[in-house]
Amino acid sequence: MPTAARRVVLAANSSWNIVNFRTGLIRRLKSEGYEPIVLAPSDAGTEARMRHLDVEWITVNIERSGLNPFSDFALLLKYRKILRRLRPFAFLGFTIKPNIYGSIAAHAQAIPVIANISGLGTVFIRRGLLLALVSGLYRFALRRAAVVFFQNPDDRALFIVRRLVQPEKARLLPGSGVDLHHFSLVPLPKGPVTFLFIGRLLGDKGVRELAEAARSLSRQHLQVRVQLLGPIDEGNRTSITRAEVERWVGDGVIEYLGEADDVRPFIEMASAVVLPSYREGLPRSLLEAGAMGRPLIAADVPGCREVVDDGVSGMLCAVRDSASLAQSMTKFAGLPREARSAMGFASRRKIEAKFSEDVVIGAYLNALGKLRAPGS
Image (tube, rainbow, N blue to C red; front, side, top):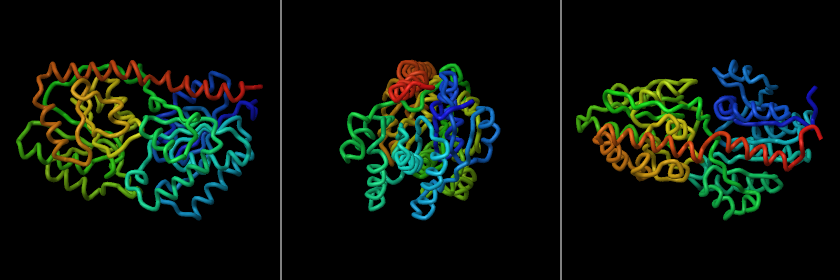
């Protein structure tokens, strides 16, 4: 029978986040004697995959965008009620609202908190009064955390400078890690150069700049394909609209591939994966594509520059600059196949050396082990 001394709660703003990024961690926690319990909304298409994890899953609905004080206070109370009943050994937070409101609820119950700041989101990109509010919430939520993991040194430094986290508690992680067996090395495809974007279709991911770059390549009559793979998240403040995507497709500059639970077949057919994001934690799409031996083209911003070695495993371009992105894509398309393959192999070697899932899981087990041994 599970006991409170073995329970570890994992909370995220979507069950999609859990099944795509935390499956390896959950399986390892179970093998080490912990009892993982997931707190996350029920997302369409992920129910079966969540059940396959064979863990207790408590659905907690979250308004991911915006700060509605009434819904956020209700979320805080929901977390507090659940945690009071479960009395877990530790609370592991992922994404903004679970990190803030879940951590506050956990502290109220004297439950140790391990937070993961996987990215700073739109608030830190656009700044303004909302940034001051969110910074204050982070400062309050993280002040008693046992460990706060960051996925790139820029985010860690920013939180320390703003005094949102104590330096001795702020540690770096190589993202959520990549299963190097699941994402195995695959040779580059033959045929025309194909650029693939993977992720939610958001303005802050640089999707509009990518569409404009694709239009520029089309005007040059380059024989390339530019593809988008991911959901149209119209609930997000910076979402690309369906009408925009349909217009790009109609103009013949973009191919929209829809959504997919398994991105590997699409990466396999790509010549390079592109992410012109404004800021990242440590982008999963680049890690997975690099593991499969794909060259990477990304904006020179925190998160992306940690993965891409400019001129070696891919190319970095200026942020929010469609002309710079188009220049990088054009240069890549003009490379001989051997040079593109060499970039792909360099990507794989870097992921093997620095971003293995085993490193991430080991860091969590080490942090948990310092709190208390399971069953003690």
